[in-house]
Length: 86
Image (cartoon, rainbow, N blue to C red; front, side, top):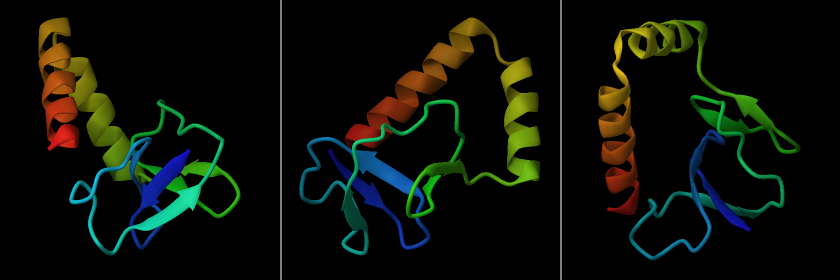
C-alpha cells in the first residue's frame, strides 16, 4: 500500500492517492503495516509507526474527548473524513 508522509514523517494519507490530494512535497513509501488508528499523529520512523503527538497535544485531545457527546464525536469524524476526501 502506498502511504504519503510529510517531510517529518507524519502520515498524510494512504490507499489510492489521487493527484492533487496530497502536497507535492509529500514522500511516498510502500508499506504493508497499517497505520494504527489509536495514534493522534501517526509518524513513520523508518521501520515502524510511532505516536508523533507531543504530551500537550495528547492531553488536549484527551480533555476534548471527555467533553464531547457521542453525537459531537460523530460530527467531528464526519468532518475529518470530508476534509480528507477534499
